[in-house]
Length: 296
Image 1: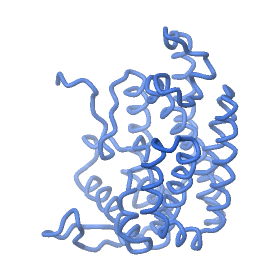
Image 2: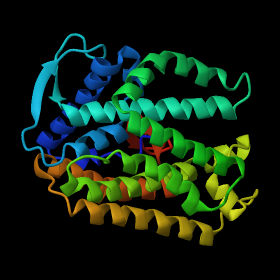
Image 3: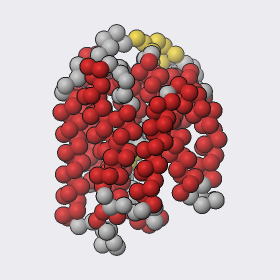
Image 4: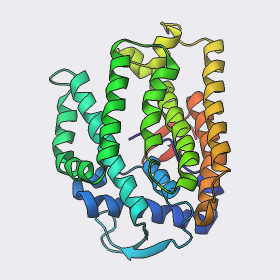
């Protein structure tokens, strides 16, 4: 759905990369097991990160070898994640559903066809996820409605619009172990804020051309000349500030079995993606970051 929260794979140890791939596959299997085959198509690395975070403190990570549609001939190692992976799967279905509904409301008849089609495929999965996690469903819907109102007003108040989205991810930690709840809520809040703002920067030129709402265009009154150097410096500062707050919150958690992966994503992945997006060198492709230019 976004694809920004990713590890720097070349810096992972072999066993850590194997564990991360197992977590990714585990979330995929959890999506199908709980919400059907169509739910697997919304699999992404951002919610793999969430599943891992919700697993923090569980020292007994279980694995199983399974086949799937993507790998029908050879079994792949995957995490048997229990509640954490079930939650991440349900939350991803709910968030995707309400973003699709927003897409329908914000688009005309023909532009909205793709959103309607995707919504039809995900409807049954959403109904089941909403039954499993009614609190998150209610909260997500309310936050996205708040965000839609701000977007319709073409609000340039970055803190307000980013807060509306950040609060969705923050709520994902609601009700877990009280020793970790507050810390995880802070970590996920700043992760959500970082995702929203970096996505806005990454889509800025496309949104200018299409006329879609972009909080950075509204905030800085971006015209044909684009952002000024001062504007870019401000955006860089606020993105790095969010990444630093994510790091500070993470340092209060008992990482346990996931330490290597989480430290890679938080200490290396967030800064690397931030710099590549700011430099125009980031491209989302199945969760991997690559240069946009082809001369490499």
